[in-house]
Structure formats: structure tokens, C-alpha cells
Image (tube, rainbow, N blue to C red; front, side, top):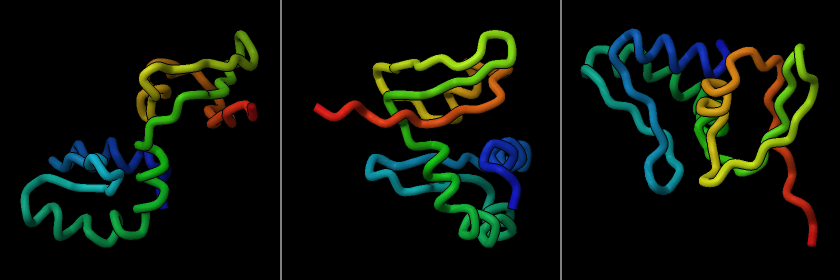
Length: 100
């Protein structure tokens, strides 16, 4: 299975839009024949795609030039968004919320 970023790029290239609905469920829009062809791939990658598209508030971002940095996003940002803002990041990892 490809990583979620590559799957989203390829799906978009093929004319599909993959997104989360307001309940956090993965949805797809596009031509019926493309949806039919992609259905097995989407089902196999569902959990990875949902995780990739789910917004999170805290992210650890590693860049070769600057090292590790912790970033808080308001509103929360998905991995897809964070990777777009930090294209040279070598690692993106969700950071746990601090316990009170």
C-alpha cells in the first residue's frame, strides 16, 4: 500500500476527491467508473487515510536544517495540511497533549 499522501495525490490526479465528513468518516467523490476502480484501494487504506486527514492540535516536526520543533495549531491541522506547510520535513508526528 502506498502512503496516504501518495494515495491522495494519485486519487486527485484520477479525478477523485477524498475527504472526511463531519463525523470523521472517509468519503469519496468522482466519476462512477473511477470510484469503482478505486474502491478496493480506498477500503484497504481507509484507516491510514482517516488518520492522515484527521486534524490534530499538536505536531512534532523534524527538518534536517533545524532539527525538532513542536508546533500547536489552532484550529487543529491534519497531517496533509502540516506536510504542505513543511514540505522539507523528514518526520511529522502527532504530539500528545500534556496531562493536567
